Image (cartoon, rainbow, N blue to C red; front, side, top):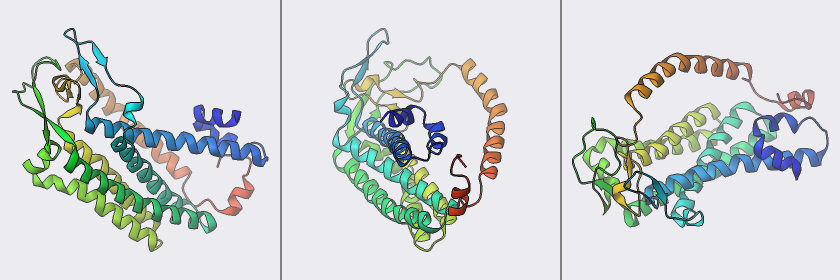
Length: 290
């Protein structure tokens, strides 16, 4: 049990530690810890996004002090849990496709089986969440004039909740329907390629599906970042949540310098760890991470 708790907080090294002791109990404890540490964040990320579509119960006082008026358990509502299920199945689907690339034999077969199951569940849950949004969830609309050059002030606007408003951006620019189309199309292609034993193509397809799922919610909510269900005027948008000009300029140059460095060492890491992990390789390196 202690190993499970350690894995929850020390997940990066957990993959290495599980192989240090050749005891089934030790490895099983770490495996469960790594499973929980991976599954819970994937679920919670989706739950958080689901609550954003519903609106978060908070408001700003006149001095711009934020006040949260909800409870933790209220965040675990049915729609948010469905959104969490979409997130969880989506990441399992993508991860299973990657495992198909890296493994063979029994592990490959299990990964392919998981990809087919969770890919199907992801598409079904995503479709169900979309129907729920269209039929039963009111969106948010800014009803006052927005001055992008003004100083950020969440209270300097008026906002209304309107049925079907989350489809507003799609109606204004029909080309945006390609975003949810990418979620369904990429997911369907990934399932097809997984079924035909083409893991690399399946991985690309599930990556496109991920972008489509996340992009669908982002397009629907724009320009809102965190709508307020208790005081719509307090909703945060891209204009009143932006950092100062100086901060943005510093971050621009930081990103310009460090992004290529991150891409370079990440590419190197993937090159070092490329190739299939076979049963013989695992037996020869059973006390190490790779």
